[in-house]
Every structure is written in C-alpha cells, then in structure tokens.
Image (cartoon, rainbow, N blue to C red; front, side, top):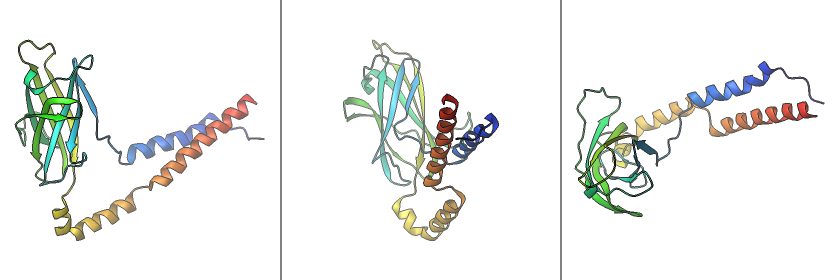
Amino acid sequence: MFPQVSRAKLCLPVVFLLVLTGSYPSVVSAHTVKIAADVGATLHIEPNDNPQAGQPSQAWFALTRKGGKAIALKDCNCQLVVYAQPHTAKEPPLLEPPLKPITAERYQGTPGADIIFPKPGAYQLALRGKPIAGENFKPFELKFEVTVAASAVNLSQNSQDVNNDVVQSQSQSFPLWAIAAAIFASIGVVLAVRQKRKG
C-alpha cells in the first residue's frame, strides 16, 4: 500500500524542520526561570511583561531558595544591573536601578525595581545576591534576557520607518501556518512509515 521509504528520505523532512525552526525567530517565554546554586527566580515585568522604551516598567523577581521558600529583599543583600546587549565582560552596566521590596502574587517584599529602558532592543538584567546574616542560601547571580519594544510615542513619530520594517520582515519570514503545515506533514510521513513497518 505504501511505497518503501529509505531512511535518508525519511530524515529529509526532519532536517528541514530543524533548519526552519533554527532560522525562524523564536518566541521567548515571558516568565523564564533561572537557577544558580540553590536559588531560583522568575522575572516579571509590569505592565504585561512588555516593557517599552522610555516608559517606566516595574521589574520584580519571584526569588526562592531550594525547597520553594521565598526570599524577601530584607533577607538578601541584592543588586540589580542592566546591560544593553551585546556587551563585553568589562563593560560597565547601563543602569543600576535601586531595589525595593515588592508585594506581588504570593511574594511579600520580593526584590523589585523601577526601570526606564532608554531605547528599544535587547537588554540583560543581572540580579546578584548574598544572604544577610542568619539566612541559609548561597551567593548567586541570575541573568535574564529582555526585549524592549518601541513606545507608542516612538511608534507614531517613526510610523513610516516602522511600516517599512514590518513589510520587509514579513516578506523575509515564513508565516506560522506554513511552519505548522510542515510539522504536521512530517509527522504524517513518520506515522505512515511506522504503520507500514508494523503491518
């Protein structure tokens, strides 16, 4: 019923998908968990994990030690630095916003800061901390990548440039439906070959 398919031909759709997903811009989860030693954190940025250049954003860290116990700012000698990406190891931070205790969700007094990113683009937030006397966790450094969008004010001022960039980026990328169709087609081929081998 099904023609004999060689392994080389079977691998072709899989290789195509790997190349396609590697070249297509990835969507990064807004709530990435980072872990260093026995401390982990999840970064949240208000509003809606969508910081905009020139607009105030509140960044806060759901900071926990191994076992799930929350770490409050009062229990941690913490420092936040912000780098524009890319940056070199010896380059000084772009911003050093002061940390303040934030109460959000189930976290009471968790480390947070108000940040105004100067322009759209990629940034790195590095949270460093050491336990205050009596606390039992190891010193840590957690790095988070953040993409900052242009603000509505910048968009209206540069609407012509933005429209040109959107048209160019749309013409250079694959639509999501094409990627989904390729994935489903590859899965169908694999399932058909497995069914043929079993039968």
